[in-house]
Length: 138
Length: 197
Length: 123
Image (cartoon, rainbow over all chains, first blue to last red):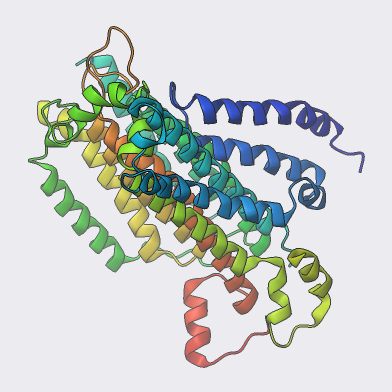
């Protein structure tokens, strides 16, 4: 398919920066606007753009369904494990104060991991939903 | 209270109302979907102006981006271009809607005014979050610290809802489903196997 | 005038809500019903966010030189609600795609007629 060559070139240039921006939003969300929910959607947008321009079959090669499903469940599990870790370290479910040497450090680790879990689940949900819709042939 | 700020708010709100009414009146489905994207983008601009930057970011990425894309994909899959019948305005629903709206407007008359720092909504736990969260969590962004730490249970619930919705879409439209439907040939069998691998 | 400006945002929110409500109860096309639901949703979001705004307040990110911030709690609630909203919208749209396969139409009244008259359509 030689049509849309401008789109293909521009998409190839843009996708790495979209992914980088998603990571920035994910890990800088503590200090500025951003966080797991927004980063997840932007991360998914990169894969959706790839699948739109290079075809859904190529998209499935980049992000196979089984990897996506592991990430989909992995995000929720990561979030819950951070909560359970609080119990094992002698406090309550989702209490981050005990995760680090000082309460503030513990809060920092806890929030970072929890946001990562949110980002994983949101991005893989969006990718899964788009791939399923785009993969239909009626 | 700056009059320019109030003017911008009122202008954006009126624009949103105009787009909503255009959606009600339009019968071209593509136009409806595009207008709903515009509606989300206007909402995002309004949120920036109301100092809700995190919310605006999410609305612009989700409401104007992914959600419009999903509506377009559904239009393509269902081959619907125009609503089937051009019905005149229906009286019974219109009366219900106008009556409900009038009652709600009557209910707003003793609400705290817009931008009031003394409103009950801004008095309960919010001052504690604003004063203590930067010290207690070490994070300047209060939205993140409330989201992930103070209200962690809430967010865990929301993430589980998102997970469940994603799993539901996979169950309803996933590639393996045609194998289980009676009366359909096993043409998709290979795909289903590939999916399970 | 004071009252009109103070309550204007609530009134527009109610207009938006009722526009969404009218689409859901009076119009038959299911995709349009989903658009109506999302208008209703955005109306609720605008309601929350406009309640959280404080005159003279800045975005709730702590910085030197600012003491007055908007209320961060409604922002958190709505931030999560937006993403949950799109996930549930996707679920609704998936059901619409299946309904189209099964009944051949996504007009609510046509489907009701089919069920009343026992018409079977080949999917």
